[in-house]
Length: 442
Image (cartoon, rainbow, N blue to C red):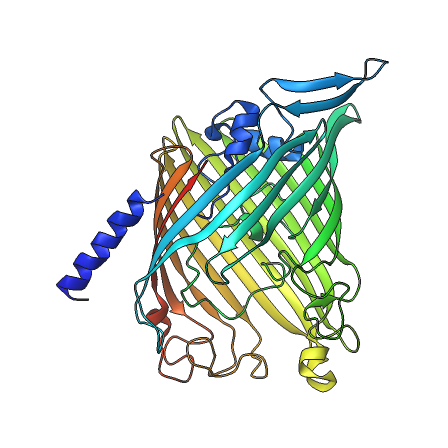
C-alpha cells in the first residue's frame, strides 16, 4: 500500500468514526427500566449478571409510570408503559482486504450496512419480547431479523428460587443468556463483503430466521439453567406451506437443548455449559432423502471485576456429525462426516468506554471433495473445510448508545490451505481483513 492509499484509508476511518454498528443494546430497554445501558452490559452486547436476569425474566422489568386498569375484583388487566417500545439502530462500515477479490473493487464502504428497528420490552406483566426488523444493504430489502418473545414467572422449588418461562424465537441460541453461543458470540459485528470460510456448523446461523421454536426454560437457585426447545421451518419470503420449490426445510421437529452451571465467587464469575441441536433437513423440496445434522457444543464463560474495569473470556467448541444422504446420494452420504468449530476470546474493558479483544477461531473436519470444490476465492482445492486465524478488535464508546470499532482478522488457513487454497492462486492471508465499524442506537 503506497502513501496515497495510506492517506485514503486514514481519511475513511476518521469519517466513519464520525458517522453514526451490529451490536444489540437496545435503548427501548433503557427507557423502560429507567436505567443506563451499563446496568445490563459489561460493554455492548455482553450481558452482565443483571442483564442475564433481565432477559431471563422476559424483558419485563419497568422503572417508569404506566397506564393501568383493574377489573371489578381489583386484578390488574392492563399495564402499558407510557412510551413506545421502539428503537432504531444504524450501522456504517469500511472494509479493506489484503488482496481484492477478482473482478471487484477493494476499500468498500457500506452506509448503512444495516438499518434496524426494534420492538422490545414489556408487553404485559410477565410477557415481553425482542423483535428486530432489518434493512440489509447486500439484499437491498427489509426483512425479519432476530425475534424472542417470552413468558416468565417465579416460584420456589426445594426451598430455592426458580425462574421459569417459555420462549418463542426464530434463531436457535438467540434466546441464550451468554456470549459464548453462536447468536451472540464474538465478533459481534463483521464485514458483509469480505470472504468468509465456506464451512460452518448448522447451529451457527444455518437456521437463523428460517425457523420458529417454542421452548421451556428455568434457572434454579441462580445456579442451574436448563432449556428444551423444538423448532419447525418457518421461512420468510418463501412458499408457505413449503413445496417442491423450497430449500432447507426441516422434515419434522428439530430439538434444541441447553444446560449450564453458573457461580459467582466474590469478584469472579464462572459458567460452564453444553447445548445442542439435531435436525433432519430436505436440501431441496419436501420429499425424498434428508440430510441429518447433530450438533453438540460446550461453552465456558469467565468474568472478573477490577473496580471500574473488567476482564471477560468466552470459549465454545461445537462438534457436528453429518449424514448427507440427500446432498451426496445414498452411497457417499451414508458415511458419517464431522465438522468442528472452536472459538475463544478474551476482553479487557476500561471504564466501560474502551474495549480490547483478542480471539482465535478454528474450523476443521473431514475432507469432502463433493461438498468443498475448487472455486475462485470461496472454494477448496483439496476438499478440506479447515480454516483458522486470529481476530483483534479495539472498541470505543463515547456514549453508551454509540460504539466505534476497528477489527482485524488474520487467517493462517482458509478453506483447507494456507497457499493456493482455492486452486486459483489465492492464499489464506489474501483474505486478511481490516474492518472499521460504527453504530448508533436511539
